[in-house]
Length: 315
View (cartoon, rainbow, N blue to C red):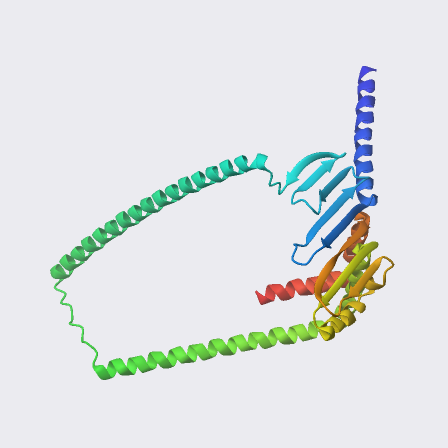
């Protein structure tokens, strides 16, 4: 009876843990990550200031940088947990101490490496001396053996100047021939690769995969693109013609025609001032579904295998 009660409670605990894990996974998948970006340039000559914020689950976790600050703050339930790029006076001493420690470590490491190198050089010298002694001993033994057997070494004839010239010409010809063969091999490989790429691109499955990938990329850009954009920009180059060309190029961007976006050209002065902000949200489930769609597609898998084989052959 007691064993059954214990097993029952173990089962309840395990089920509650699994429920928590499942609930957390569902939250991560379906609760969106919200982001915001802001940029401002109030006066000519001033630096462009920027800020951003990324939050999840009603700012349960948030990462933020204000426009007038350099530090990035990570918060959980509104409580700051970690400060990144914090250049306050409180941390200057710590940073200085860390730098000194790093310098000392580097010096110690250098000394160790120098000692290791010296030991290695000494070892090599010892080995070289030992090998040289062994070689001299072997030579002496060989000379003694030859003397006993009555062997007389034939004098080596020095090649004439003409023979040396002929040998040099032969070596040069063989070198040029080898270089030509190497170049021809490389050209053949390049042509093979080019023909393989052309065949791969012309393949019907590749074309279908490229169309699918293009559609998925366009969808992804649309999904990630900010849902709300606010902007108020005044620009001018000092040259009316150049300002007009830039205005024509900017007018081709769809974001310019949004409700809260104002772009004003100044045809007289050279100026760039304004501010802009963008807000959006992203759900992890979208990327999971995208990955499943790509992995389940047979044509995409086949194309990936072809690319893999092609890269292996190229290596």
